[in-house]
View 1 (tube, one colour):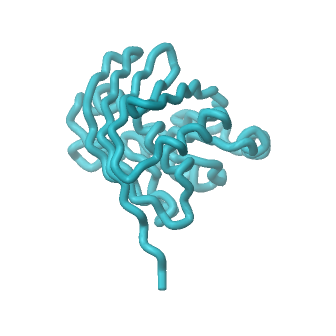
View 2 (view 1 turned 135 degrees about the vertical axis):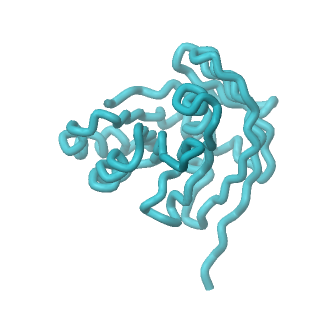
Length: 186
């Protein structure tokens, strides 16, 4: 018998001071049985960091949502689609292989990878030369300590505030807060 995904609900208030984007997002996250709280919360943080693209790329007329991720390797972890169905932004979380990332670069206007865990540096050194060609790719590393602290914020029902200022994401639930300063690798 296959295990089912666990459903999490999040009300995310985004205040992106860097990009002048302020909005509330009611989100549903399906955590795959093999996914950790840490990875799921990195997906949420990635959405918060890129939420301003809804306005920048689609003029506010699009949909920013979680993709199938681990359930379907041909789907992103987070995506932004405009009203025509065109994928404007494709976000991957973790340490994907080069071929799916290159393929995603052909399917979307922009692809962003958020690598995390202590092995992210080793992963990047091994894959960096294979990803030099795509011009619409950005790769970021989430510091290990911050990604591990994010897992503590995971609850089945979450009320979260996300503030982006000077490249730092402050994500909190009113009691606890995690500061995340992604490091650009590409």
